[in-house]
Amino acid sequence: MISMRRGARRRRRGWRIAATVTAVLLAAAVALTAIAFPSVAATTCPGCYGLERLRPGLYAELGLAPAERRHVAEVVDQANQRVRAFFGGRVSSPDVLVCLSDDCYRRIGGGRERGIAVLNRSVMLSPRGVDPVIASHELTHVELHARLDGADVPQWFDEGLAVLVSDDPRYLAPAGDRCLLDSRRALPATLADWLRTASANPHVYAEAACRVSRWAGRNGGTKALPTLIERLSTGEAVPLALSGPQRPLEAPSSHISRRARSVARTLFSADT
Ligand SMILES: [Zn+2]
Image (cartoon, rainbow, N blue to C red; front, side):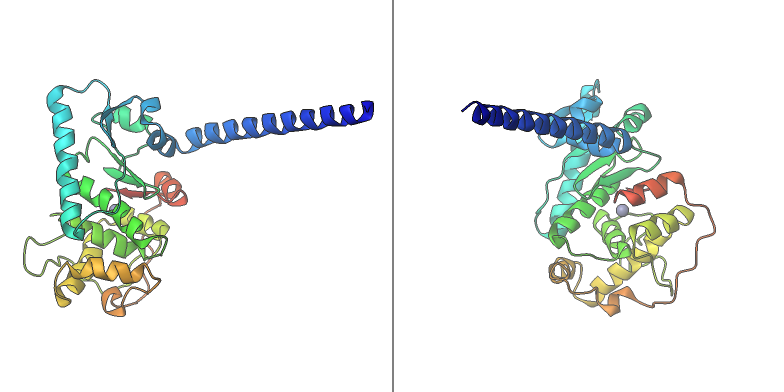
């Protein structure tokens, strides 16, 4: 009888130790994530990083004037509308975190980019990215990945699509054939290669947009793209007619920034 009670006590003590160790490990993992990847932590708990909720899914830095809050909401509304119109609806509804000061953006883990799609689930906009073009670009990354449902596409397709949906005047002609830069080279397929190439030469966005917009032009217009994405989500490869020539990409001469390396490791889509 006594040895049975002792056995039960030992088991209870064992469970308590296991529970304590698990709690300590979890707390350590949360703390490490917050230190190593503040943007992941900030998008998980915007309030912990000094942002306030303007409405469900939209957070901005504390203390903005009413006109600034209205501006932020309008920019995000216009960007959402752009994405919805292009895809004919939405399957994603990411949280959007907006900073109007560099201090705020640094605090939530941002760098020198205008915006980031964090893990393709949430969007952070820097003071230079509070604009319907940048916001819809980042929202497109999230929408595409929600539609792909885990299927992989080359990074240049992801970026070219985002330029097209956001109607980015830096990289697209205003009408007709929207191609500004038709290149004869293979474009970066991985996020790491994309960040390396784009940090050396942002015109690669125009090359990617050229491929995607010309393919859409040959296939009945931009409404062909949501249909293509549906096919890609089943594991089909990007059509050869879209990916274009496959000559090897020249290595960019400029150095890779530490920021680019770190975002590449963590699957962030950071955009200039
Ligand atoms: Zn992008």
